[in-house]
Image 1 (cartoon, helix red, strand yellow):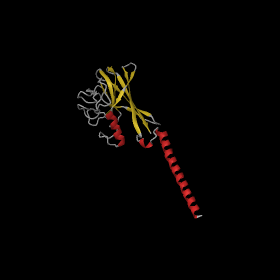
Image 2 (cartoon, helix red, strand yellow):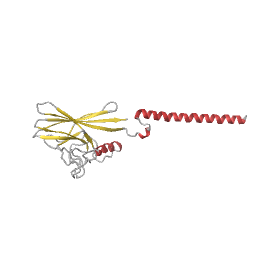
Image 3 (cartoon, one colour):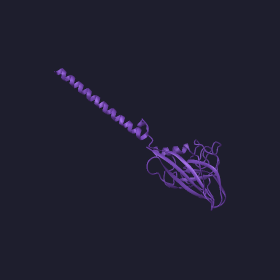
Image 4 (cartoon, one colour):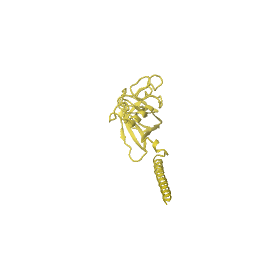
Length: 236
Protein backbone atom coordinates (compact mmCIF):
# COMPACT_ATOMS: atom_id res chain seq x y z
CA UNK A 1 0.00 0.00 0.00
CA UNK A 2 2.85 2.34 0.92
CA UNK A 3 4.54 1.73 -2.47
CA UNK A 4 1.23 2.37 -4.20
CA UNK A 5 0.83 5.74 -2.44
CA UNK A 6 4.37 6.74 -3.40
CA UNK A 7 3.62 5.91 -7.03
CA UNK A 8 0.42 7.97 -6.98
CA UNK A 9 2.31 10.90 -5.39
CA UNK A 10 4.99 10.79 -8.10
CA UNK A 11 2.34 10.69 -10.83
CA UNK A 12 0.53 13.66 -9.23
CA UNK A 13 3.74 15.71 -9.09
CA UNK A 14 4.46 14.90 -12.73
CA UNK A 15 0.99 16.08 -13.73
CA UNK A 16 1.39 19.29 -11.74
CA UNK A 17 4.76 19.92 -13.37
CA UNK A 18 3.32 19.31 -16.82
CA UNK A 19 0.39 21.65 -16.14
CA UNK A 20 2.75 24.38 -14.85
CA UNK A 21 4.99 23.98 -17.89
CA UNK A 22 2.02 24.21 -20.24
CA UNK A 23 0.71 27.29 -18.42
CA UNK A 24 4.12 28.97 -18.68
CA UNK A 25 4.27 28.13 -22.38
CA UNK A 26 0.82 29.63 -22.93
CA UNK A 27 1.84 32.85 -21.16
CA UNK A 28 4.99 33.19 -23.30
CA UNK A 29 3.05 32.37 -26.48
CA UNK A 30 0.35 34.91 -25.59
CA UNK A 31 3.02 37.55 -24.98
CA UNK A 32 4.68 36.84 -28.32
CA UNK A 33 1.36 36.82 -30.18
CA UNK A 34 0.39 40.09 -28.52
CA UNK A 35 3.77 41.59 -29.44
CA UNK A 36 3.41 40.43 -33.03
CA UNK A 37 -0.07 41.95 -33.33
CA UNK A 38 1.20 45.25 -31.89
CA UNK A 39 4.52 45.47 -33.69
CA UNK A 40 4.60 42.96 -36.55
CA UNK A 41 7.72 41.48 -34.96
CA UNK A 42 7.86 37.88 -33.58
CA UNK A 43 10.58 39.01 -31.17
CA UNK A 44 8.89 41.61 -28.92
CA UNK A 45 12.13 42.10 -26.97
CA UNK A 46 13.80 43.30 -30.16
CA UNK A 47 11.30 46.09 -30.81
CA UNK A 48 12.93 48.87 -28.82
CA UNK A 49 12.01 51.90 -30.95
CA UNK A 50 8.92 53.45 -29.47
CA UNK A 51 8.70 56.19 -32.10
CA UNK A 52 10.77 57.51 -34.94
CA UNK A 53 10.85 60.03 -37.76
CA UNK A 54 9.80 58.27 -40.94
CA UNK A 55 10.06 61.00 -43.53
CA UNK A 56 10.15 64.73 -44.23
CA UNK A 57 8.38 65.96 -47.36
CA UNK A 58 8.65 69.33 -49.07
CA UNK A 59 6.39 71.63 -51.09
CA UNK A 60 6.67 75.25 -52.22
CA UNK A 61 4.08 77.59 -53.71
CA UNK A 62 5.34 80.72 -55.49
CA UNK A 63 2.87 83.56 -55.95
CA UNK A 64 3.73 86.58 -58.15
CA UNK A 65 2.34 89.83 -56.76
CA UNK A 66 -1.27 89.96 -57.87
CA UNK A 67 -0.98 86.54 -59.54
CA UNK A 68 -1.96 82.97 -58.75
CA UNK A 69 0.08 80.38 -56.82
CA UNK A 70 2.36 78.03 -58.74
CA UNK A 71 3.21 75.00 -56.61
CA UNK A 72 5.74 72.21 -56.85
CA UNK A 73 6.77 69.34 -54.63
CA UNK A 74 10.35 68.11 -54.66
CA UNK A 75 12.33 65.14 -53.44
CA UNK A 76 14.20 66.05 -50.29
CA UNK A 77 17.11 64.69 -48.29
CA UNK A 78 16.95 63.82 -44.60
CA UNK A 79 20.54 64.22 -43.38
CA UNK A 80 22.13 61.40 -41.37
CA UNK A 81 23.57 63.93 -38.92
CA UNK A 82 20.15 65.55 -38.47
CA UNK A 83 18.50 62.19 -37.87
CA UNK A 84 21.23 61.31 -35.33
CA UNK A 85 20.49 64.56 -33.48
CA UNK A 86 16.83 63.54 -33.15
CA UNK A 87 17.76 60.00 -32.09
CA UNK A 88 20.19 61.20 -29.40
CA UNK A 89 17.66 63.72 -28.14
CA UNK A 90 15.03 61.00 -27.71
CA UNK A 91 17.26 58.23 -26.37
CA UNK A 92 19.67 60.08 -24.07
CA UNK A 93 18.77 63.79 -24.09
CA UNK A 94 22.42 64.39 -24.89
CA UNK A 95 22.45 65.63 -28.45
CA UNK A 96 25.35 68.03 -27.87
CA UNK A 97 23.73 71.14 -29.33
CA UNK A 98 21.21 73.60 -27.85
CA UNK A 99 18.57 72.67 -25.29
CA UNK A 100 15.24 72.09 -26.97
CA UNK A 101 12.94 75.09 -26.48
CA UNK A 102 10.99 77.61 -28.55
CA UNK A 103 14.26 79.00 -29.91
CA UNK A 104 15.76 75.56 -30.56
CA UNK A 105 13.56 73.02 -32.32
CA UNK A 106 12.86 71.95 -35.89
CA UNK A 107 10.27 74.61 -36.74
CA UNK A 108 12.60 77.05 -38.53
CA UNK A 109 12.76 77.24 -42.31
CA UNK A 110 15.89 78.50 -44.08
CA UNK A 111 16.42 79.30 -47.76
CA UNK A 112 19.28 79.20 -50.28
CA UNK A 113 19.89 79.82 -53.95
CA UNK A 114 22.29 76.88 -54.18
CA UNK A 115 21.44 74.42 -56.96
CA UNK A 116 23.79 71.68 -55.70
CA UNK A 117 21.66 68.76 -54.54
CA UNK A 118 22.80 67.53 -51.10
CA UNK A 119 23.22 63.91 -50.09
CA UNK A 120 22.19 62.27 -46.81
CA UNK A 121 25.79 61.61 -45.77
CA UNK A 122 26.86 65.27 -45.91
CA UNK A 123 27.52 66.62 -42.41
CA UNK A 124 24.87 69.23 -41.59
CA UNK A 125 25.65 70.59 -38.13
CA UNK A 126 27.53 73.45 -36.48
CA UNK A 127 29.49 76.36 -37.86
CA UNK A 128 30.71 76.23 -41.44
CA UNK A 129 34.01 74.44 -42.04
CA UNK A 130 35.54 72.60 -44.98
CA UNK A 131 33.62 69.46 -44.00
CA UNK A 132 30.38 70.49 -42.29
CA UNK A 133 27.80 73.24 -41.87
CA UNK A 134 24.37 73.65 -40.31
CA UNK A 135 23.52 76.39 -42.82
CA UNK A 136 21.10 75.84 -45.68
CA UNK A 137 22.89 75.19 -48.96
CA UNK A 138 26.20 74.45 -47.24
CA UNK A 139 25.79 70.86 -45.99
CA UNK A 140 29.11 69.04 -46.21
CA UNK A 141 31.01 72.29 -45.89
CA UNK A 142 33.10 74.31 -48.32
CA UNK A 143 36.03 72.00 -48.84
CA UNK A 144 34.97 70.73 -52.25
CA UNK A 145 33.06 67.68 -51.07
CA UNK A 146 30.03 69.57 -49.83
CA UNK A 147 27.44 71.95 -51.25
CA UNK A 148 29.79 74.93 -50.91
CA UNK A 149 26.88 77.40 -51.12
CA UNK A 150 25.37 80.01 -48.85
CA UNK A 151 22.20 80.57 -46.85
CA UNK A 152 20.06 83.60 -47.68
CA UNK A 153 20.01 86.05 -44.77
CA UNK A 154 18.48 89.26 -46.20
CA UNK A 155 15.83 90.62 -48.59
CA UNK A 156 13.04 88.87 -46.66
CA UNK A 157 14.59 85.40 -46.88
CA UNK A 158 16.33 85.07 -43.50
CA UNK A 159 15.49 81.84 -41.65
CA UNK A 160 12.21 82.17 -39.79
CA UNK A 161 9.95 80.15 -37.51
CA UNK A 162 7.09 78.49 -39.32
CA UNK A 163 3.52 77.89 -38.18
CA UNK A 164 3.34 74.38 -36.74
CA UNK A 165 0.46 71.92 -36.90
CA UNK A 166 1.10 69.18 -34.38
CA UNK A 167 0.38 65.48 -34.76
CA UNK A 168 -2.79 64.05 -33.25
CA UNK A 169 -4.61 60.73 -33.15
CA UNK A 170 -3.33 57.28 -34.02
CA UNK A 171 -0.06 56.32 -35.71
CA UNK A 172 1.05 57.20 -38.34
CA UNK A 173 0.45 60.94 -38.32
CA UNK A 174 2.00 64.05 -39.83
CA UNK A 175 2.97 67.47 -38.52
CA UNK A 176 3.60 70.49 -40.75
CA UNK A 177 5.83 73.56 -40.60
CA UNK A 178 4.76 76.39 -42.93
CA UNK A 179 6.22 79.83 -43.59
CA UNK A 180 5.69 82.43 -46.32
CA UNK A 181 8.69 84.50 -47.42
CA UNK A 182 8.15 87.86 -49.15
CA UNK A 183 10.74 89.45 -51.42
CA UNK A 184 11.08 93.01 -50.11
CA UNK A 185 14.05 94.83 -51.65
CA UNK A 186 15.26 93.35 -54.94
CA UNK A 187 14.76 90.40 -57.28
CA UNK A 188 15.94 87.16 -55.69
CA UNK A 189 16.29 83.63 -57.05
CA UNK A 190 15.65 80.71 -54.68
CA UNK A 191 15.99 76.98 -55.30
CA UNK A 192 16.59 75.30 -51.97
CA UNK A 193 14.88 75.14 -48.59
CA UNK A 194 15.96 73.55 -45.31
CA UNK A 195 14.33 72.58 -42.04
CA UNK A 196 16.64 73.73 -39.24
CA UNK A 197 16.58 73.93 -35.45
CA UNK A 198 17.20 77.65 -34.93
CA UNK A 199 17.00 80.96 -36.76
CA UNK A 200 20.63 82.09 -36.46
CA UNK A 201 22.92 80.76 -39.17
CA UNK A 202 26.67 80.31 -38.71
CA UNK A 203 26.03 78.93 -35.23
CA UNK A 204 27.68 76.07 -33.37
CA UNK A 205 24.20 74.94 -32.31
CA UNK A 206 22.68 74.90 -35.79
CA UNK A 207 21.40 71.54 -37.06
CA UNK A 208 20.02 71.11 -40.58
CA UNK A 209 17.55 68.19 -40.49
CA UNK A 210 16.45 68.12 -44.14
CA UNK A 211 16.90 69.99 -47.41
CA UNK A 212 15.05 70.14 -50.71
CA UNK A 213 16.32 71.48 -54.03
CA UNK A 214 13.61 72.58 -56.46
CA UNK A 215 13.26 74.27 -59.83
CA UNK A 216 14.62 77.82 -59.43
CA UNK A 217 12.11 80.60 -58.86
CA UNK A 218 13.02 84.29 -59.27
CA UNK A 219 10.91 86.50 -57.06
CA UNK A 220 10.38 90.18 -57.72
CA UNK A 221 9.64 92.75 -55.02
CA UNK A 222 6.30 91.86 -53.44
CA UNK A 223 6.28 88.24 -54.67
CA UNK A 224 5.86 85.50 -52.07
CA UNK A 225 6.87 81.89 -51.72
CA UNK A 226 5.17 79.61 -49.22
CA UNK A 227 7.26 76.71 -47.93
CA UNK A 228 5.65 73.63 -46.38
CA UNK A 229 7.59 70.89 -44.61
CA UNK A 230 5.60 67.81 -43.63
CA UNK A 231 7.10 65.37 -41.12
CA UNK A 232 5.51 61.93 -40.88
CA UNK A 233 5.75 60.04 -37.60
CA UNK A 234 4.97 56.53 -36.43
CA UNK A 235 5.09 54.94 -33.02
CA UNK A 236 4.36 51.62 -31.35
